[in-house]
Amino acid sequence: MARRPARESALERFLRYARIDTQSKEGCDQVPSTEKQLVLANLLRSELAAMGASDARVDAHGYVLASVPATLPPGHPARGRVPRIGLVSHMDTSPSAPGANVRPVVRTYRGGDIRLGNGVVIRARENPELARNKGKTIVTTDGTTLLGADDKAGIAVIMTVAGELLRDRSIPHGEVRIAFTPDEEVGNGTKYLDLDAFGAEVAYTLDGDTAGELNRETFSADSATITVHGRSIHPGTAKDRMVNALRALGDLIVRLPLDMAPETTEGREPFIHPHRAEGEEGQATLQLLLRDFETAGLVRQRRILERIVREVRGLHPKARIELEVKESYRNMRDGIAREPRATLALEEATRRAGLKPRWVPIRGGTDGSRLTAMGLPTPNVFGGGQNFHGPTEWLSVEGLEKSLETVRHLLAVWVELSMPSRVEVPPGPRARARAVAR
Ligand SMILES: [Zn+2]
Image (tube, rainbow, N blue to C red):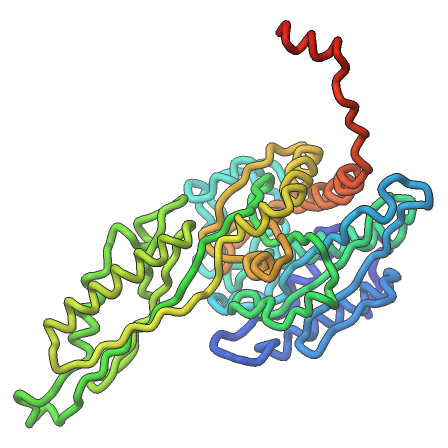
């Protein structure tokens, strides 16, 4: 192992992890979907062990698990009362952009557009966060790969905090559980996460972007597949016999509501998104994403698809058209609301880090969506990165440091919230009289 400074900063850690190729692969049932994710998994395990996390391990599916023991001394009022707090980040990077040979560029942002190599430009107009980083240090790519701040910024924050806590046992905190997951980007981040082994009672994913932005809401999501069965005949003799599945597929696509598409919606607006079509005359399929913050809205979306399918069946009576809808994930809002302290503590910690907390709904899912559905309330915390999944991805170092500060405060706030509640003394007759007078 290369010699590293004893107290490596979160940025130094990030730069080291970002250079390791951990791209995951779509359409693979195995977890991890790519062997190379294990390179980072094993490195993190050995670094955690070197810090003193005696139980650091990589399990059979490449999940890294470790814990930091509680430090509250005997007699501390919150001792034994602080829930085990889980910190979660994912190790893989998105398959939608190259992830090998990442060469992070550390620079001071002077204003204006940033010209990376390869003709890639980060435009000031499209990146309002850049203005807030003028004169400050940011990290970009060289234009040929993604950066991987999604989610190695989160890993760097968790590793830095773990190092600090294991080095200095005088910082009061409850037990901290760490999980680094593979394959989040391909929808399998929590597929084999052993919740009992993880052992957290409340968890936080560090997988967000802008400093100060927190998430307790994601889309509710289903996926749909429409299959058209046609009849393939040599085109020379096809008259009155061929049933071209592609024509029916085209008729389906043009009927999808344009005002309910990802490219025409934002904020809390729902969408139906056809994202993959394939086929030939004999058979063609269309895959769609259904997304709405209200789970009931997915039923409405399904009805829209059913109506379109009925209409197109009428146009192509000889084709057989099937619609299948599958559940993907559900808005984590209700599951998180069951542990109100989870969001309360995070909000307060963000404030103590000098930021104004903003709850923003995520137009997507996180590992937290499924963890929350599995019974572990898991809000999401910002990490400082922007423009995930492409070569214009960049990281605000200030955002990264604020994320680190927020997590430090978070553990402290949880100790405070876990103190035995003060004994409520019922108001005496005089207090009651005063209340009436008011
Ligand atoms: Zn992510």
